[in-house]
Structures are given as C-alpha cells and as structure tokens.
Length: 206
Ligand SMILES: C[S@@+](CC[C@H](N)C(=O)[O-])C[C@H]1O[C@@H](n2cnc3c(N)ncnc32)[C@H](O)[C@@H]1O
Image 1 (cartoon, rainbow, N blue to C red):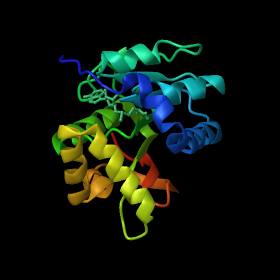
Image 2: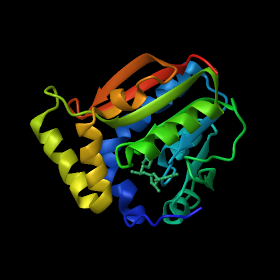
Image 3: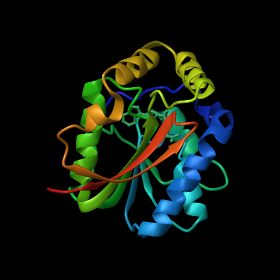
C-alpha cells in the first residue's frame, strides 16, 4: 500500500474548526439517536470526529492512508483509534459495522476510487446498517459566499484534489456516485448555506 502525505495535517482542524464543528455535532446527535455500537470512520484524517464521539462516550474505529494525518489522530489529549489502511481495500470482515461514515473525502478522489470506497463501506456494513456521507453539494440553492468559499478551499488544496473536486461536481456529485448502490436514504441535513449535505442511508441488501 502506498501511503500519502497530507500537507495540511497539522493545521487542518484549527483551519476548518468553525466550518466543520456543526457537522461534527450533528454526527454525534445521530449516533446518540440510533445508538450505534460499531462505528467506522473511513478516511478519518485527523480523527477529529472520532475524538468528539469519544468525548460523548462512543468508541469508533478510523482508517486513513496518510501517516501525517494519523499522527495527529493518534496524538493530543484524547486519542482516536485509527489504523493505516487503504479505504478501497480495508482489512475488516464483511458486515462488521452498524455505522460507516465518510466525511469530506469522496469529492477529492477519482470516481473509480470514490466508488471503490463506497463499495468497501457497503461490504463492511451490516445489512440494515447505516452509511453516513458528508460532502459538498453545489446547486442553485447554495449561497454565493458559501460556494466561493468552497471553491477557494478546494483550490488551495490544489492539483489533483482540485481537479477531482470539479469533476465530482460536473459528474453530478453524490447522487451520481450512489446510483445503483443498494442504499435507501433515511435523512439529510444541509450546512453552509446549502453547500454541504450530510446524507444518512440504510444498506438494504447483502
Ligand atoms: C479532506 S480529508 C477528510 C478527513 C476527515 N474525514 C474529516 O472529516 O475531517 C480526506 C482524508 O482522506 C484520506 N484518504 C485519501 N485517500 C484515501 C484512501 N484511499 N484510503 C484511506 N484514506 C484516504 C486522506 O489521507 C485524508 O486524511
């Protein structure tokens, strides 16, 4: 497996704190509501979501391919339980988790990798288990400032990341990526003036 450097690992959380915090809190509320027992955070990055869940008494497992991000996840006062793994080939048994989430990670991948990650999430999630996805959704409802900010953040991330982000939106975003997957939508919540959507889905077959 080829690991990846993430050049903004150390500043990722402070930089995006105000932008991401409401989303992290909503995830905690959903975890409380559905009382998940086995939680997986795919492409967990700095483990910020897992650390917040831990503060509320919920344990979860993270995986990420970047050692620099994982160093942040494994450090600090509260440590996240994260493993170095490629999300397109995870080392977990089938049907293990009752919640698998992927937050802000699909838009920055090539379509094949993004689909590969979702297929792996389906494999490791129990039938009737849940899949939670947070990512951008730019439509006519998205606020102008919000849209500009999202493009700016992705442009700063640069290179391949920015190219994949634009391709993701052009191809139809999450609905296109999810087409023909055995998932049914349970809920959605919007953030950032309709620039970000949290979608909760149920796996309907094995
Ligand atoms: C924008 S960060 C999002 C981090 C985190 N989910 C969050 O909510 O802040 C995307 C993460 O995906 C990770 N990643 C990219 N490709 C991956 C892969 N194939 N397997 C596992 N992690 C991957 C990167 O290392 C990075 O930490």
